[in-house]
Amino acid sequence: MRDLARLLTQQGPLNWEVAGQLAAWTASEGQVEPNPNPLSRIRTEELLRVAEMHVGEATGLVTSRRGWLSPRPVTRSQWASVMLRAWKEPLSAVATSLGGPGGGAVASASAGTGQQKGQQDEVASPMSDLLGNLPQVVMPLVFGAQVGTMVGQLARRAMGQYDVPMPAPQGDELLAVPANVDEFSNEWGLDADDARMYVCLRDVAFHVVLSRPHVSAFLQDHLQRYASAFAVETDIIEQRLVGLDPSDPGSFQRALGDPESLLAEMQTEQQKRLLVPLRALLSVVSGYTDFIVDKVGRRLVGSYPLVSEAFRRRRLEAKTGERLLAKLLGVEVDQAVVDRGQAFVEGVLERAGDAPLASLWARPELLPTPAEVEAPGLWLARTELLG
Image (cartoon, rainbow, N blue to C red; front, side):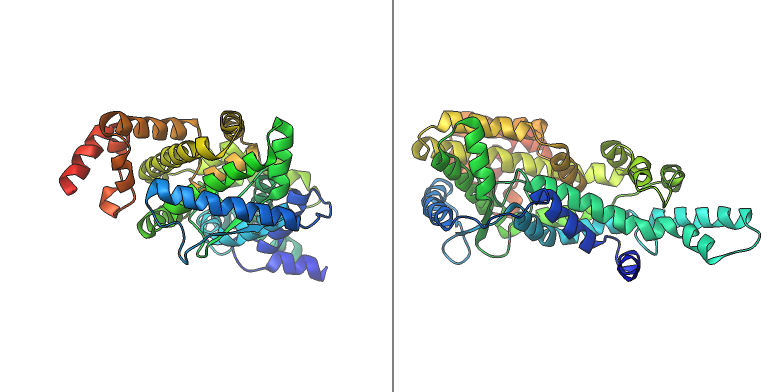
């Protein structure tokens, strides 16, 4: 009972203890995970050095802050734990904007249910006070459980640092999940080293771009503003919680309903406006990194056509947890984003070759606007004027 009371009274809009436990359990499927093989770390480190050298040469950009990148092989549950900490700020902003303890739509809903309870009961009781406040008490647990489950599901498939295009870490360590890379290469009949090299190239290319100070600042600013702009109408919350039964755990899931429809109900006009520049940036990042990986990978990966096709299909077959987490944070790289970024890069190549692409990340004012992503010629003309 003390443990239950501690869980129910934990401060904050999202219960991080529940999130961490569910993330680890979902990632490991409740099994004890063996530590990554030391030989796998050595091999990944060798491939990462080669990938860093070639990506640096292809982009003309600094690849790391201290001078070199290093891999950090982890288990699935360790990956989930690290990413929960790394994404704590935007996820907390989501939970707060949805009305954690002390405010927002959930507080309004709990107040409403409390008033209705008071009208029904002539004599107040401690139990009625608890039930009247139930949505406000339970929602941090619900948020924690959903976030933990989604991160855990992503950890089941994540191969490295940038399976979700979030801001780069402060250091020069890149996470790697050898178990997932090996499982994927076995499923598709790929050479294990070719698959590892592809992941190294992908993550180094993303790291080069997303660690640029102005790109990181732009992404972090839009992520925080997007995460803080969720809103749910009070009547929607009340309708979803009307059947909540503390004695029936299944009632919580039934009250939430379809997560994707719930996300659609929560999205505001402000978020739709914020998604315009955010998705434009994600398109260009996706198109550029795909171009660099393709350019370098054809030289370094022996079975590159097979490997690239396997990874392309894998990206299109994202699981529900992956899609929901990316949508929740506003960083979903769906087929529309991929196609848009590819069209932008191809438009630049057709008009001016690959030389102008090097200037994409040079200065904040050279980042393409949403209109320029649709019309690469406009971006080329403006960057020519800016020198």
